[in-house]
Length: 332
Image 1 (cartoon, rainbow, N blue to C red):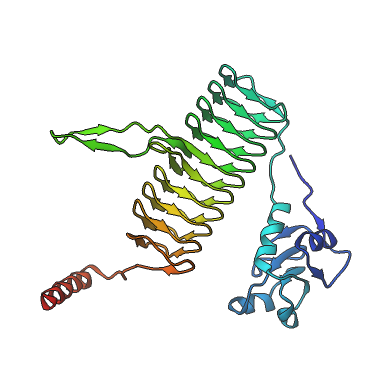
Image 2 (image 1 turned 180 degrees about the vertical axis):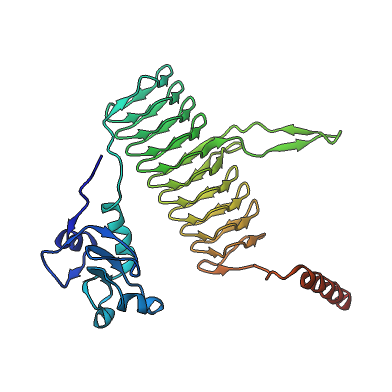
């Protein structure tokens, strides 16, 4: 469906709580400073991209008051240009409009309830005792097992699997290929050195306003639930182990692995491909740099943890390892 996405500068000004230098202008799109053309709005966050601002062809730039003297075009003064940019992306986001309906190919189990305002696409399978709230979107190929609850305004994209008894809050978005509530990795070794499976008796509880990227896995708890609290944002291809607790407004970038029973306190920021071992507690507002392994609990809040060893060409790396071995001998 074609959508007219143009907005007046007055509408945008109100949305971002800003002050525009011009009236009566209409904006048709969002773009970078370098690629913007007439009719676009862009944003300037600081001196690193000053040349982009000076040469921009954007019709309007989101900017701090302290930078307006170097802006060559119309501007919209805001407190935080990048945050204001994030607000207007929703306005200019092209999306399909779905009529509330349940397609004929959908399979629905016993005692499941779907609010009539929701949309369920082709080839969705819904188990017994499922509850789906208002204005939910469930796209094709989704499998929802028994006892799942999905609350209002949540979007479940194609080919997601939601295992039994998972609870998903309001205004969440789960992207294609993710699995929520699969078995955690639990085994016990017997006297014959054989591994015996520990059946996972908990589930997964997801709060409100949570985003989960494509092909991410959130394991169910072994006894208590794995918990993802309100406002958490998780990127693609992330592994969350059983019994983890990810507290409010934490953000986790792609390819992160978090082992079981780890707690991320509120507001943590985990960089891409970082690894966090199990049974740890990471203090609030901790930043973990990309590629870092965390092997002990972090007790002080607001710190940045970095443990990235520089890479070398292979021959140089072999020389480094020899040097490290010599250091160990000196220490002994």
